Length: 268
Length: 240
Image 1 (cartoon, each protein chain N blue to C red):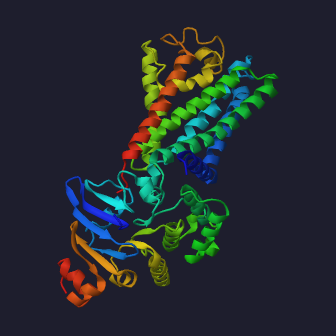
Image 2 (cartoon, chains in turn orange, purple; image 1 turned 60 degrees about the vertical axis):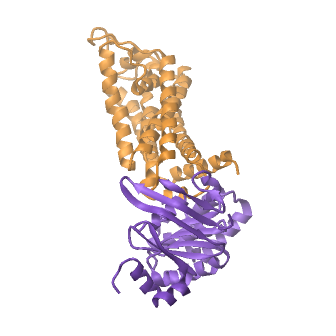
Image 3 (cartoon, rainbow over the protein chains, first blue to last red; image 1 turned 90 degrees about the vertical axis):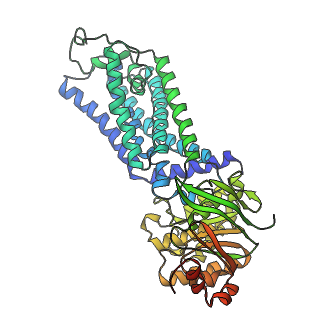
């Protein structure tokens, strides 16, 4: 039996596990709640929807982005869980390479996240079509960037999961990095007018900034007059190509490191 | 190298603690060997190295002539193992779990379904075949662990305290199953239960502090020491 066939088997059953877990549906619920918050909150708090469909599309991109971050919850235990809950005593005594196992688990997580992201973009597209009668072409680009962001977030999660003794540790560390530590570094670099395209949090912003940079995104939350003079630093959106490069680097490096660490890790 | 299990000068350090000290033994085909020893003697460490779960500090284990550290996948294809108290994915049923593990071993289609039914019947889990494992007791998981061990009909069984968590009826049934399948397989079986080992195995290896103290036919040991219990206690420094 080839490793490719084994990979398919692992990915299939790991995906089945995700489908059976409540947390996947919780993230579906959170995605829907985030979109509803924008769809209901904006007209309620800001005298109707923005004039520009792109601004609204950028605002609605919060849902799929949240789904991507939420995926950390079911990727965090992908590797650490095998050691922590002793399921590895069954799985690792099978004739399969660790790299195939990890790759299969990664593909299964990707499949689950893709479902979540598609769900988010279906809501975005339907909402824009109903409210504005059009869906901007950038939505397709945003969808692609969101999938890439999801892949890189999963890779980082797998890296921490391969290092961590417990699933909770891996999940918390990843969330802290992506939602707290990276954005802080990101903000400091931005205020110092230094390049920050290589931060994963910045790269993730591309899902929204693809509609027209930070400025158009922020128009959605600033009532009138845009951002002129409001920030003590220059607000510059990094090049999309550089942000894609950053996400690809996180994706490849995170996955490669998790392969290497998992291969060496012993189940004592 | 005709013996299915060959252990040569196996040593294992956990940091500075020496768990196995140049352990060497060979298990002949269709022999059922009990690995006995006090807690921390090195039994589980030996079995884990055999199953590729941990790496030896030095020395080699061969399964059917295959070096486990060099070609773990090939070696593992010949082994059915229960190591420690294994857990299963809570969200899958026994049928799905066995299907997953069977397919990883190249089994498929009707033959896999047939074999799953056979092993599930063997461990008496028929009524639970489609129930998620999250509802299972410790004993039921041990039964499922035995089922996955036998699923691919491996020539070598590596069992580490496999009856742990089973109720008295389960223990008796388990011993009968291993005794029966062990007639045509090589069984390497770590346990604290001397009665269990005496029932299932024809030979015992007694180890302590990572050293092999004795490796003999049970009948021979009983002749020398009156009983297996006496042999165990005397060799491991216990009081009779």
